[in-house]
Length: 168
Image (cartoon, rainbow, N blue to C red; front, side):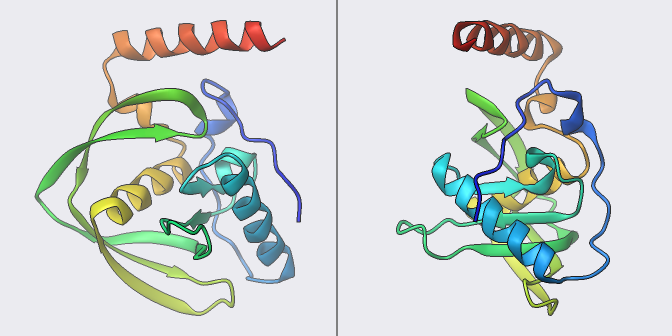
C-alpha cells in the first residue's frame, strides 16, 4: 500500500469529471487500499479518487470509531434523494482547516459496485448521506466550497495560498 498525494483546492484537477471504472480488478483494489491508507493518515472519513488525481469513479468511506470498516463505492450513483434538506458543517481533505455549512439531502439511495465488482444499494441518512453526497460531488468535479458565496470562496483561496507559502 502507498500514501497518495491529496490535491488541494483550488487545484484545477479537482474540477475533472471522473470516468466510470470499466473493470473492477487488482488495479482498482490496490487503488482502494491506497486511498484508504491515505484517508486514514490524513484523519479523514471519506476520499474520492479525484482528490488523489485519479479520475475514475471510486470513493472510500469509513465512519467507524476504530477506522476498520472501509467501504468502497465504485461507479456510485445517487438513484434517489429526499426532498428534505439538512444544513451541516463540512470539511474536506482537499480544503484543509476550512469548515462551513452546506445544505444536503437528508437521505439518499446510492447504487455502486463493491471491491469485488458486485452491485449493491445503500439507503443512507445522517453522516453517511452527507459523506456520500460530498464524495460524489468530487467525482463530478465539484468541491464543497463551491456551495458557498463567492466572497467566502475568495477568502478560502486567499487563506490556502497563505498557508501554502508558509509551508514552502
